[in-house]
Length: 126
Image (tube, rainbow, N blue to C red; front, side, top):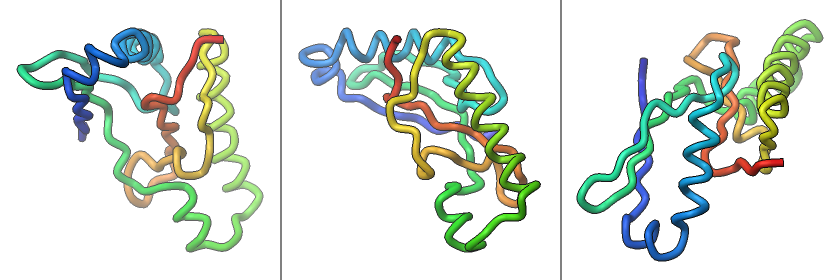
């Protein structure tokens, strides 16, 4: 499995966004669903808060739709169901996605139809 690292400068994190970032990390840790990109770990090194996330390397839904121009009904239904299932999981945990758009819906790998919704720093408690 591929992973991606997000680095947040520790000085910025401590001075300005400590509470927000800690809240986001706690929320991300709760989310375990096949259609949601998972946070694998979070830690502080010498200079940064490091958040380790699952990587979805298949590209954005926006790019895919632009290339295909239209989808067959069965394909659109499959994609929409995965997005709805992932967002429903979030809502069941009292979490909302404040930036749901095509750019934040990704394919797990190239050539597959498995969807992953990206939630990095877009969550807020209901």
